[in-house]
Image 1 (cartoon, rainbow, N blue to C red):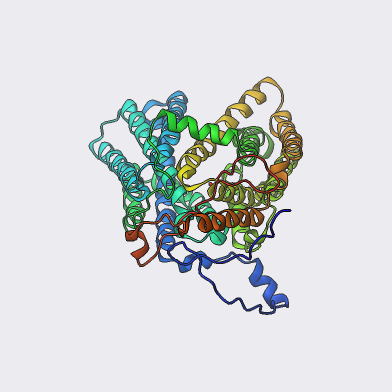
Image 2 (image 1 turned 90 degrees about the vertical axis):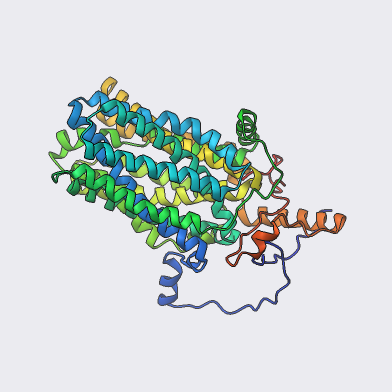
Length: 493
């Protein structure tokens, strides 16, 4: 007979377990308590390292959006060709795919703090070069494309490292809340950045203002990364290279929970992402409102993030992710049939709210499902999916609109997304039954067994890390154990 699971014991700041006395207090009731429970969970902000990282990334994202708007506008102002603007997207996408995968393998082999610091430094240097070429009036489209490619490679590498850092600086139970805060701040940046960029690029020397502001804001992210303690992979050492990349991909293929978390995201972005159709909708359906269409999803995500306190209390994260993606696709499909701008914007905001929920659960499953020595590679694949999915969705939407009709391209493919996600979720039972808390208890049981057999504590954190005043949470030594409902090996934005 299976042994009963031991009671959960919290981690101390060095990553080990310490016995504590738990006092069960009655839960507060009333309307005020319900409102506090629904509000965004801010507990991770009590951790200094995470607080600096969140502020730094929030500031740098506003700057990143300034550059993302300024670069295509500057390219078009020089070339008067949309082809060059499209090439800028391609120039950034290819390095993201390559360095997202390879950068994730590097993140599993080296100190993630140093990798994030160096790759972020490259991103900052490219932004400075964008400013310099503007001030010198070089006017070269090819130079801009090269700089965009280099920046894309550095961004993918730093993203892989940053995603693997979060589970090491916050306790496991706060990872969903930490991700929710990050996505909420990200949506603020995605709203403010384009608005500020639109004002700056319209000014004389506006491109220089945009790149200069980006370089200035990005220093906050560099400072936050610099202040982190050393974060070396907690598991067995791996050697960065093509073999490590393929090991990461094979690990995902052998774990149905991870595979489905990526599959539902790809389905949502490829089949139910209508951004490429926004210009046509504004021109032919609403005769304006392009700004509202582009900002509606981010506004909805921001609103959901502000009342997201319940997210970290959900156990069945596979079910929650499934219904969040379905909510996204249903809202998108209905928006395609709407014939008034206000209704379309409202439905897009609802889709954005569902997207925030799905993003949090997808990233949380990814960060907590795999052993620490795999997290960098998992984040690399996550970066590729997040960056590549919307671009492939734009290609799909544009091609379908040209070959069929606007409604089929917008709503028809969203309905297909609903069907595929439902069928896939029910077919992959380990994903549908995935219980985050039960899986954590299985890991705890396995770790207890290892401690009994070896007499060791199972800690993988270095002495230097344990002495750091902010603390780094070591990954559980047995994070590769499968949950009771899955026969696949355990896995890990």
